Length: 497
Image (cartoon, rainbow, N blue to C red):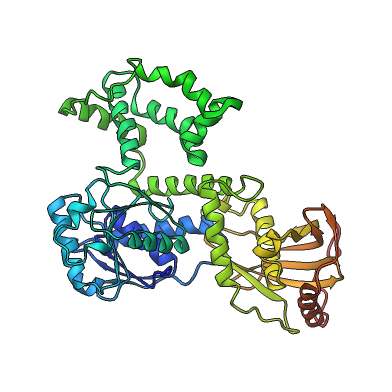
C-alpha cells in the first residue's frame, strides 16, 4: 500500500503540471487529461524546470523517469491509476463534477486526491459512489520541490485512506500531514491569508511597497520559518523558560491595536493597479520561467543547507530530503556494479548543472571535490558501508586528497567517474578517481585519496569488519592487474614525464 505504481493527473496547469513532474521524476508513469490546447507545451516547460531543479537537488540516482501519456478522455487517464490527482480550477461545481466522473471511472482501490486550496472535501465528495477514498491533498507550489501536502478528509473519508495517502507520499519525497478537522482553506492557507491581508493594508496605506514587504519577509522570519516553523521559533524567543515565558511576555500584544486582520481591504481598481505596477517594477524584467528557475535554485540551496543541519542528520525540509535520498540510494544499491580486472569501477554518472558553474560557465573547484566525494560514497556502498553501517557508528573518513584539474567541466556537460583501488589493508583504502567527459571519455580531473576506517563514536581508527574487508579484497584482487594510473603519486607542481 505504500507505493504508487501508476498515477493520473486531471488538470495540467501550474499545480497539476508540477504534480506530473513530482510523480514522473520519482519513476512513476503518469496519465494526463487536460483539454487545454497548450497542455503539452505547458507541462513540457514545467518538466524542464523540474528536471533542472532535481539536477541541483540531489546526487542520489533518480529512477528512470516515468512515462508521461496525454490521454484523450478523463476515463482513459484514470482507469488503471492507483493515485489520481485532480487539479482543475477552484470552482465547486466544476470540481465536484470532475471528481464524481473520476470516481465512476477509477478502479475501486484507487485513491483520489484534490489539489483544492480551500474547498471542503465533504462538499466535493457529495455525489460520489465511493466517497470514502476522496481526500484533499493540498500541495504548495512548486509541488516537485516543496514537499508538504495537507491531507484533509471529509465526513465520508475513511481514516485508512488518509493513512494510505500519507504512506504513499513518503517514497516520492513528500511529507503528508493529516489535518484533524476540515475547515475552509485548511491550515497553510489560513496562515498565508492572514499575512496576505495585512500585507495588502501595508501597501494600500503606503507604509511600504511590494519589494520592501518581500524583503522584510525573505531576510528575516521567512528564513527562520523555513527551518523551524512558528511555534518552535517562538519557544526559543522565550529563552530558558521556554514557551510559557514567551506567552507571558508577548501575549498582551495580541490585544494591542496593531493589526487590521478583522478589517478587509477593498481591492478596488486603484489598489489593484498600484500593486500590479509595483510588482512590475519589482520583477517585470524577468519572464515567468526565469522567475521559476530562480525560485527553484534558491529553494534547492535552502534545502541543502537544512540537510546539513543537526550534526548532519538534517533539519526540517532538509531532513526529509536526506531521507528521500537514502530511499533513492537504497533502491540504486540493488543494481550491481561490475568488478573487472579489465577496467576501473564506473560509479557515478551525472551532468554539470547550473548550480555547479561559476560566471565563466565552468565547474567551480568545490564541485570537483563533491563529485570525487560522491564517487567515494558509491565505493563505500559497494563494499557494504551504507547508511545503516554509518548510523551504527563506523565509516571511512578521507584523510588525504590530491586533485589535478586537466580540463573544464561546462554547463550541461555529461560526466562519469571511474575509481581504481590502488591498495588496502585492514584500516586503509588508497584509490584513484577520474572524472570523464561522457561524450569523449577524456579525463578532465583526477583525485588520489586515502580513506581511514574509523569508529566515529570513539573518534579513532579501527579495523574494518571481515565482511567489508572481503568485498574490498575482491576489488583489490581485480584492480591489482590494472596499470598504474597516469599521475599517481605526483606531488603539486611536478611535471609529467
